[in-house]
Image (cartoon, rainbow, N blue to C red; front, side, top):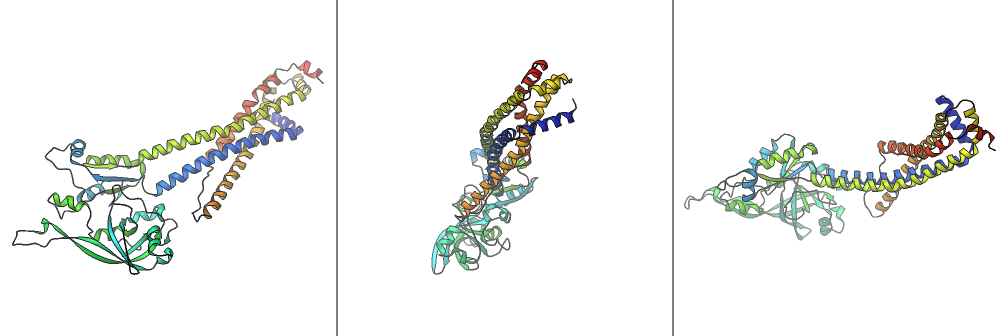
Length: 443
């Protein structure tokens, strides 16, 4: 029997019991819809988490700190008489020259005192690299990002802005002054034999800053920083302020008071898969370096297991729907025994009869799969809409928690067809085994 004849017979048979076949197809579509809806939620949450984490710049960043003496001897092969390498400007340039490195910047944070509207507030200032503009922390911020890398501007964290004013958004465009401790080298004293490199002094300084924005959360900073920065400055401006920091005492004890070193550096790589190679190179230079790649791998594993469980529970409804296919086709055998007998009497083989029932099962699976994917997609959109309404009611930004990629559509339809064909194995085999003589005598 030709394929065209099989298709025509299958369509005619499906039309004859339209209500029953339609209900069976709807049952399959409900199973597919539940599968797609659950998987779309898992994939959407994974995409949301991955996107938010990627936009923080943490997964293409390496955090570098100086090694202790003991760690330096073990990790970099230094002799006990050789001091560990200093994380200074020279080391910064060496790291910037490594392949695939696009940016190296220090984690600059220092205590300040803010003077605004006749009141003073103690907090922590932090330097922000220009690349942080793309971080998710600045999405939906009030105002704008810094106009330049060294502009006398500041962005306030929302908690600090609320502390300064009852109307935080009204602070944008206004000025405030900050008082900080500046590190200055001691002047040379020939009478005592002191040179500029023998020490430094700490003097108070004050600077006026223009408020250009209010941000909800602080962008991700380095490790080992002194608290969270609530007043953000352009990184280049923060470097030129020559503020006193905790490692100044360490430099003084090392007889290098005016050789400035960093507490930590952040190395940005142009592609996350290349982070490991750059990290190994930095460790070979004699520094402690680590990234968050292991955390991302663990996160991916968690979501994979989560998607697996969602897929299993979603598939249960489809398996139940397959029982409807078995019932529908078994009933069709009883109703069409005479038709099957005539087909066999006209020369149809057992394979032809079996193929006819497989085509009918596959047709119900295909239609149910297409309809189920559409319903599952609509359910996902409904979840997104409900989530947006809930978040907007709490003044939070809208997000998408579901996603239906093309591979999920193809996999759901394929799975539906496979389950339908599997459900049609028993009815098809039973129909193929009918004796044509007994089938023709059946009423």
